[in-house]
Image (cartoon, rainbow, N blue to C red):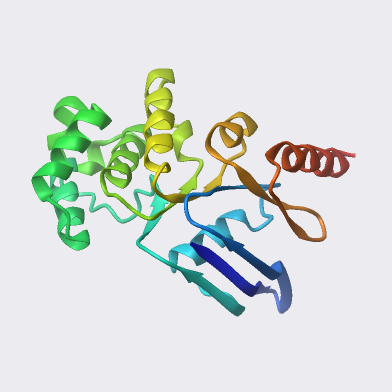
Length: 221
């Protein structure tokens, strides 16, 4: 469960205040997958970071029940001088999960071959993303946060990622930020649309996508 109680988030730049989320109130029950739709800079990733606890609302509260993932696929916490395997073991210890089980899962799913035992600094950005996604999915969370990550890799890896994510969300909630409307349709069952003047919740995903497209068309004019 995720509940937003009068959540507002503002930033001050050049002595000016910019509000990206204003008075958001919403309760999302368990086992729902919420899509975030909006233009770049609308506040989607900011909302994810507040749910994750890495950023605080300016006012209001965000209440969650259960274990919340870091943004799925985020590789910024990996140590560049440790191997992929060593990074997996480190994360397993932090989250209190079976170390060997996580390593086995990640090694098979990420399919990095010999690179899994090489330092992370030798990885390409795509390899880091594959590792990060696999580590994220290897730990069972109650709420998964996703920021574009399943778009990485080749077509086969993307298909495997989508299948695995849908399997995980059969027993968990998710919040998904993606510019791919096809991916939102595939992974989500409701949506928040970040419009030019407000944020609206839609139970009907088709209505949400239609409204998002109308908003984007107005911006392009």
